[in-house]
Length: 358
Image (tube, rainbow, N blue to C red):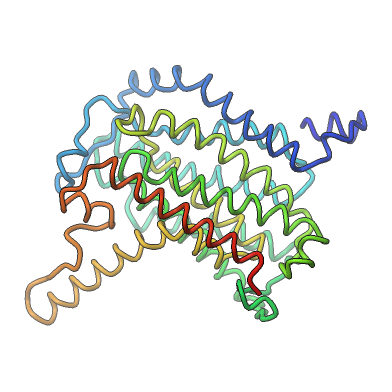
């Protein structure tokens, strides 16, 4: 909106620059978040949107009077900032908005069932998965129909790329849905998921800026994607909105993110990774999400395997996802969260180092 008004209509050059708009997109998201939070918290408490805690979770999770669905605050601040600072003539911006709103609606329904209807299971796995596949397919088909490149690129081996052809659509769906669920699995402790979301968003702010700049992309042997620079502004807005949420979500949390926040943020990161052709960088920068997800997969299939073979299911971890394993070992919640943040920072630095390794 401001891009259209101040640059295209009034000709103010400052609003052309992605760096300028990225900075103020982050600031805008933060201001909106801080202004809205008191009202949001009161409304969520008045409506009694408090998450129903599953019985098998540790006692530390049974916190009183902490509302869920705080991810709505992130989504509102994020969308407001995007509409204000992005060039809305770029189709990539609208695909990101579809990811945020589509997965946000799925998460909202899931949270509503858990919080208002007092059903700790929420939306059934089948319904949730089909809904996620549907929204992700819409994004993937949208990209494909635009003539978007279907080539798959690899970090380090930058001269090697594979043309996926029609397989690009299921690949993109896999990345978007997988990332969405991975962030959701990580969101189990105060401030745990939002920290890696911030570090991963910063990595993709850098990669998006480079991908949208033909000179930098060619110099660093990265795929050039026309219009991808706008995604840097979106990543900046994510950082701003997430920092506000972390202010209130840090231990002891005043609000929980809920699926409405974790599913939408994960889907957005997956969408940005697909557009910038950096899906494997996402796996590195978002390594905490990957670890959490694999801990669940390994735990589930090892339990089924041992039950079938020995008649009694055995577990590798004390509990999954991985952060619950450390809780069961006696680690305090803040210690787990901060250590996972440290790991996410290290992984973000490794991901950024891939810019120069070739």
